[in-house]
Image 1 (spheres, rainbow, N blue to C red):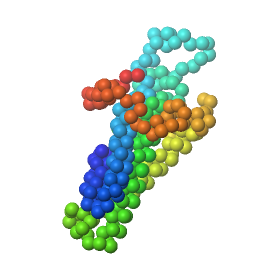
Image 2: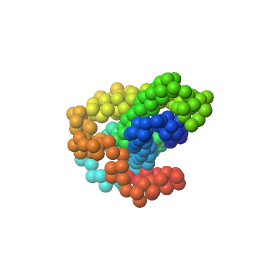
Image 3: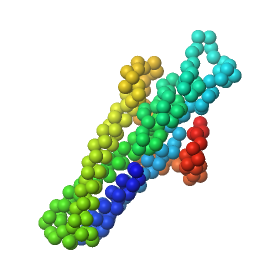
Image 4: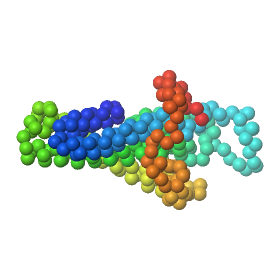
Length: 258
């Protein structure tokens, strides 16, 4: 569904607005910007969907395994009664994935996966790029309407005026909806990272038993390393062979390997 909506927006932007435009540079620059952002958005979506969010191995709360941990006197570990796993600190059980997830933020149906310790970065990038292409699409639509009102509608697009208006209206509605949703979600995620508090911890009003990271330390922990353009790159650390294996594992319904 997410990919269909992005590809629909890409079709309308390119074939209804940019290709019929009279200015070559206007079409080239806006087309390069919009399509690049769309690729980054879809790549971020794919990485969020396929990356292990931090799943705890199922059924590892056995007597033999707990004895192998060599716990110190007074040291306490917690067992999840739902998936029979040893719950690390800040882990929560997802009723949809039926797994305990380390630093679980929430389960997102748009990526069909939990957002947790290991894939939160890609989810933040996904919301950022979707909000950017939504804002870009709205700006282009406004410019296109303004240009077509000043001139003849037949000269504005290779499609008929009725079809063009209908496609643009659906695009604007889609862009407004997703710009609002993803911009709010992006802001919420950045706020959570800077405060070192997941959405579940905030909703449950859990008192922190861990040492909270200061703002930049939290950002570095999620995005990896000091601030750089690599923070915005969803392709960082991507290996083609591993991606193929992840796609195959999701199709076959196998569990994450941790």
